[in-house]
Length: 221
Image (cartoon, rainbow, N blue to C red; front, side, top):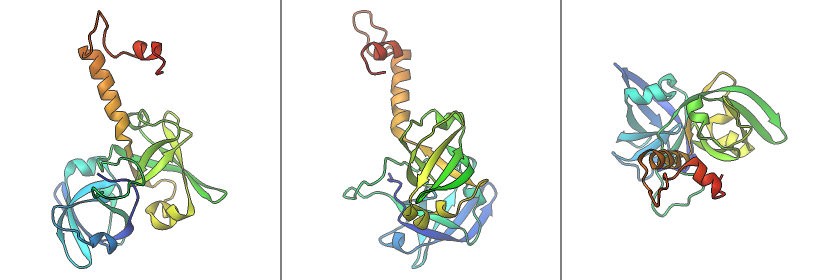
């Protein structure tokens, strides 16, 4: 589990393609503290397993499904990446629930300045947009952010100067791809709602279960 609070910018030292897989060597400093083989680490929001670690870098393999869903296949030597170690049980929770299981990629459509903020408009598929709500959370390249101006195929994010300084989003441009992960809480609510309606999990005196009509009548919608 991650929070979307990036700890540091790492650097790709090597990217080696092996058939449909790739192996990455990533330079880091802060994230290497207590890091060991088998630990999870988010690289641009993608949860990867550490396969080896030394004094200056860690190693990770990327499987075909991850390459299909994310932009990791575009990484090359010298590229910067957002790094976050898994949240310890006694850690401070500063962002939102981020699993590191990316839903897909989006494309930066526009970039503009607004006061002290850098505003990015990002395209996204309907499968991702469906889980976004106005002022809701989304992880963009592993950065916990607030989505607004949510439309049918895009949304906006606003970056404070600190975020542009310490994450890759500070030098992203229109046309660049970013990894997107919608808030997992919305996915669980949807699954629970649909299965409750389909399987009639809560029958009582002729009720049809948890339905849209029932929630509306009770004032939840």
